[in-house]
Amino acid sequence: MALCGDHKDREVRIHESLEELSTDLADYVAELSEASVKERGVFSIALSGGSLISLMGKLCEAPYNKTVDWAKWYIFWADERVVAKSHADSNYKLAKDNLLSKVPIVPSHVHSINDSVSAEEAADEYKFVIRQLVKSRIVSVSDVSDSPKFDLILLGMGSDGHVASLFPDHSVLEEKDEWVTFITDSPKPPPERITFTLPVINSASNVAIVVTGENKAETVHLAIDDIGADCPLLPARLVQPRKGKLAWFLDNHAASKLDNYQFSE
Image 1 (tube, rainbow, N blue to C red):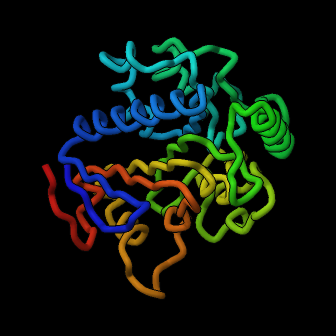
Image 2: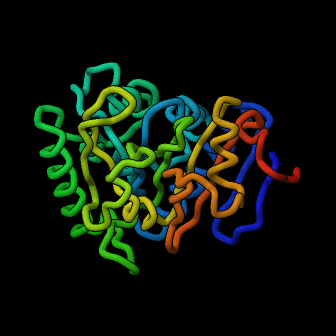
Image 3: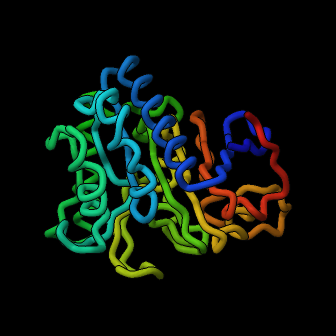
C-alpha cells in the first residue's frame, strides 16, 4: 500500500490490487467499529451504493465475521434511490444481498428509507428517524454544529466527482440547514433520490471515499491534488470533515494521475 499527501486529517491509501484494497478497507472498518463500541457502546455507519458494497465483502469472511461486534452496528444510507426495496437500483437491496444478509446484524438496527412515499416525504421521514436516534444517543451529535455525527460514512465517487447523491453544479450542494434532502432530477438514473447533505457528511467522525478504475483517475486528481483556483468545484472535493478524519481508498489505476505519492511498508 502507498500513502499519499501530508494533510493532518486526510489520508490517501493507494493499493496495488482490489484484493489489497478490500482487505485494507475491512481492517479500517473493523478497527473503527471496535473503537466506537468501546467508547460509545454502538457503531453508527452510513453506506452508499455502487462498487463500494462489493469492496466491503471481506467483512463477511474470517476473521471479521466472527470478531466484529455486529450486534452493536446501526446502519444508515448516505443516499438512496427512491425505488422499491426489491428494485435492482435500490442501495438497500445491494447492501442486503451482498453484506447485511451474510453477517448477524440486528434487523431493527437497519434504517432504510420508506420506499412507499415521495422523495420529499422519504427525506423528511429519514431525517425524523435520525433525529430520534440522536436523541437516544445511538447517533452522536457534532460539537461544532447541530448535525448528527456518524461514526463512519462510506462513500463512492462517480466519474463526474459526485458523492452520495450530491452532483456537480446542483443546488443541493448549497443546502446548509437540512440533514437529509431530496432530488428529483438526478443526472444519473433513477432521477428521484434522498441524500445526506454536506454539513452531515462533514460532521462525521470518519469519512472514507472508495474509488477504483482508470476511468476515474482524472477526477481523483481534481478531487485530491492542489491544482489552484481553476479547479472545478467537485462535490468530492467539498468533503472536508470539520473535526473528523477523511480517508481515500484508491486502487493504483484510480490513483494513476495523482501528482505524487510514496510507498510505505
